[in-house]
Length: 307
Image 1 (cartoon, rainbow, N blue to C red):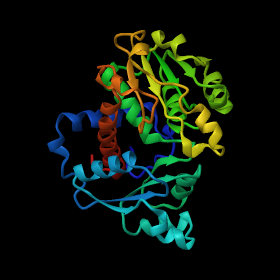
Image 2: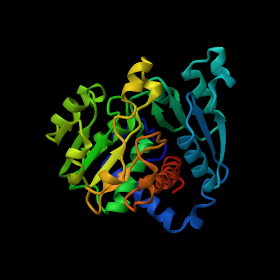
Image 3: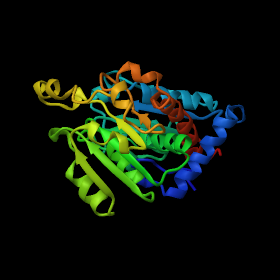
Image 4: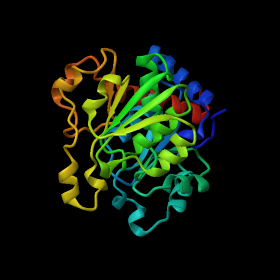
C-alpha cells in the first residue's frame, strides 16, 4: 500500500511496489482519458530550492493531466525561505494547504528532513549530488518499456559519475535485478564514489568495470546512459573547462554499438551527445522525458491513494 508514503530514495519502495507504479503507468499510457479527473480537488505543492525545468514541468504536467492543481515556488528568494524559515516549518505550513509535496533542494538530505515533519507525502525531486528517485523511476520505466525487461542487461554509464545523482540512484535501483553488469566510463576525477562501489556493487557481488574510453566497450552495451558534466557542482572553473568535453557521443561511435542498444540521458544535455545522434532510432532520451511524466502521474496517484 503506497498511500501516504514518502519517496526519498529509490530503495524506499520494494521491487513489487515499483512494479505496481509501472503497471499503473502502463494503464495511463494506454488510456489517458480514464485518468484525467482522478485528482480533481487535489493540490500538489512544488518546493524547488534550485533551478529545474524538466523535473518541475514534468510534475506540474503530471498533476494537471490527472485533473489536480499546483501551487509552489521555483525561486526560494520569493518565498519565506528568504526570511530564514526552516524546512521543518515550511513543510508543516505547506501541509495545511496541499495534499502532496515535491521538493528539489541543493543540500543532500533536505527532503528527508522535510519528511520527518510532514503530514502529507513528500517526493524527493533531487537533493544535491545525492538522490533523484523519480528520475530513477523514469529510467526504469523507459528501460522496461523499450527493452521489455529489467534484468540480464549490461549498462554503461558515461560522463560525470561522481556528482551525477541520477547515476547513483539508477545503479542502486538496477542492482536489485538479476544478472546486471555495469561499465563505468569516466575520467579519473569523475569516477563513481567509493561508497557506491563498496556499499552497492561489491556488497551485492554486482559485476562492474571502470574504464576511461567509451570506444573500448560501447559494443558490449545494451544501454548507454550519458550524463552531463555539471558546471554547478565544480568549485574550480578550470577543472570544469578541462573535463566538460571528455565524452561526445557521435555517429561514428554509434556505428560500433549494438543494433538494439538504447541511449538514455536525464537531460539537459550540453555537448555530450552530438545532435546528429538524435535521428538514430536508438536515441531514446526524449521518449525517456515523456515516460517521466507518465510515471510521475502514476506515483502521485498511488501516494494520494486515488488509484
